[in-house]
Length: 268
Length: 287
Ligand SMILES: Nc1ncnc2c1ncn2[C@@H]1O[C@H](COP(=O)(O)OP(=O)(O)OP(=O)(O)O)[C@@H](O)[C@H]1O
Ligand SMILES: [Mg+2]
Image (cartoon, rainbow over all chains, first blue to last red; front, side, top):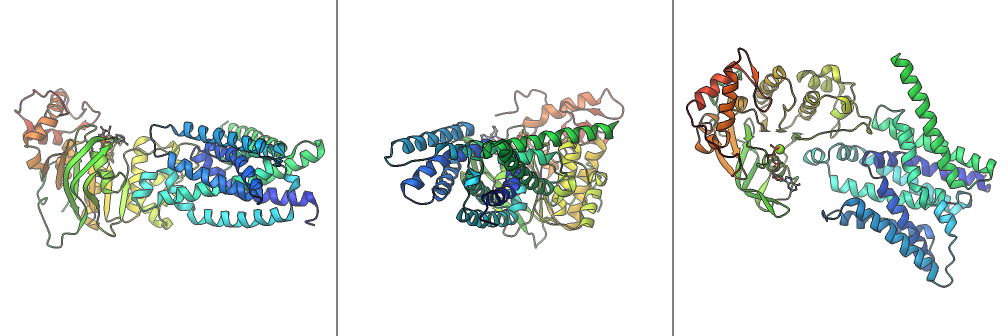
């Protein structure tokens, strides 16, 4: 069954979406959409470095993205540097370095389009194993830090005063996002990674009354988007990454329509 | 004993120092600077179990900063500040807002930093008069409702020390008196310490054991009756107190003071005793 590239694509996509849902909720709650984007941009540098050192590109990506997350943590200390400015510099700076390296190192051939827009249909068995392990680890870690991270998100002073290790859980969260982005690059590509984090979460908000419910819904909406997007891409022969994002947007609009219609009816 | 808000028994047992006084938080020669500007300097203070200590002072005088330094939320520049080992904190910060992006019910907020069983949650909410809000969305609470819910949440943790930064901001008149009374009751019942920041001078004077009058440093400190006669206190608050009195004279029951606080008959009497006859020439709150 795993020999079928479609099955592999579906499995890989669903595993990534199940992690992206809950993590995306925190990205949305903490207003960190641009943070995800920045790490995704730095991913291309990771691809180049991975190929340069002849290791799996996904490992290069994971390392560079984690380093970018740490750099952002460090830059946050400089209060004269606005955080969106720091993010922008890091995003475009690392993207530029990545592109320059990719273009100038002789013999380095990068299929740029597949990294910018993803190539879920190219997921191999090895990738699937890595994505599976990563997903299980990420979800377990998230479950462990859930209460603390939520408390730090609601009011970080209050959480810290009452004993929550705020700095530690924030760092762990940033690393989880970094790793997810490394995995998701394969699915939807650098330019669309943030969409997989925030669209399912935004959709889930309309369906949920608690943070936990929103996390579960976001995971499910992500799965629907991956499945629908893959179907769309087969049917229209369209690129898979953008098709998945398109499916997510359609899901968002449908949920928005239905929930708005319902609450209007309830009010009437 | 029942503690009243009339000020008649202010400080009656304020000076009590049981032999087994258990210090919960303290600062020694504390200095805090933000961006190179000194916010606090030379602050010595202490709060023990069973005590209610209130910090008063003008806006920007460093009240919140002092509280945060004790809680380890801002870096200390010189001296030291902190909690005794194992002190369990219930904290109500000055600013708290949850926006609608996060679906958070009051019920879920109650267990934000620690688990609690359902009956305990209901009891804590009932105690501060917001039992009916249990399923409400935190983002949609009014200001006063938010304060009450935050107080309930802090209580639910069964703290040794309650740290309340302007706990009754936005709470209605009846509720304000009731919440201060509740804070007194909790202290009597559970023997917890209460460190509070407040602008309600009259209530503070009535319901507090120790007052710290802050303005970048400690201007004066002690039992309320002493502090209210201290020249530094009069310099900082004399004009406000006098203005409140002036407004009061035109009303029968109660009225709103300059800063929105409600002045009661009893409070008025109390203030009158303390401040009648002092001069009205105060140039500024800051010095
Ligand atoms: N994070 C910060 N960075 C720079 N300055 C700060 C910071 N926090 C507080 N300050 C400064 O420290 C001083 C004291 O602030 P603080 O919040 O402790 O005052 P406060 O007494 O609680 O005032 P209020 O009655 O308005 O709550 C203010 O002048 C403020 O500008
Ligand atoms: Mg303050």
